[in-house]
Length: 387
Image 1 (tube, one colour):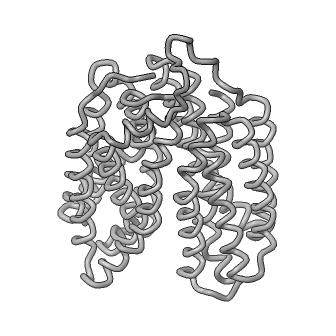
Image 2 (cartoon, rainbow, N blue to C red):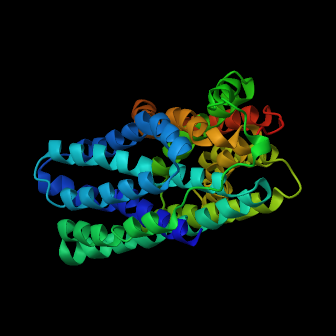
């Protein structure tokens, strides 16, 4: 768990969060627009969506050691390549590769390892241990990348990030092992797991989960992109808007701690639905009270508490409901539409704002998405696990 906490923090910091800091200097150096550069990140996320299911199948069959090690090695090499790009097409090529590396080495792969290794009563605490530490990836790597870029330029910053990311290669190679074999009583002769996958995909609850988490991802992605701009538009200084947005990372950790603590008394689906409902109310409230300092803080805090809840709720719910021997495959099917939503939602939010000339309709849609997520997750009833 300590190893995965370190590798996920470094992986997300170098492969994902650093992009936001490097966006403007890269656009200036390549003589192109920030929109064109942002499209490379979209391509990276869509690549992860395409690879989610095949990588899930690989994890179920062979475990995470080789895949996560190769993913880390690929990510390190691509960070080096990123530092040398001189054309937009090269940046897109690198980011597509980073999407593949991320899908093989970040959360979904790590969660599959955790689910396979731990008994049901230990999974929540194990997931929490990893995600609480990794939740500070933005807190560490955004200022680090900013300082490196300011002092040495974005190309040198990427070389340093590549050196840091290289640490994850031996960590994954030596610390990630295959899980213990399942007890004979749980093995079915001739059962390759296809039956478990068919059973899950035929379950109405599985598709309710897919709809709920995809709606929530749509809301989170849109909210993250527009929050600072909306606060500035309502009259707040840019420094205040950035500081308020920075609370989301800390609040996401708090939300994960609260969720895990409540799991001892309530169903994970009930807790998750309740948190999503709070987010719906907070998003709807923000345009009403967001022009005031106190109102903005309260509304953003209410939304922020649910910022990281889906990260730990999704693997726990899947493991509770379905055969954990095929967890990674089922998670991959679930993650694919979520990744597409993550890539497309910010563009749709920006288009809606441009058309409406206001952030109020965008936040109303975000509130509706959170409400849909709350209702669909609440509609999923617990079923006996087959693992």
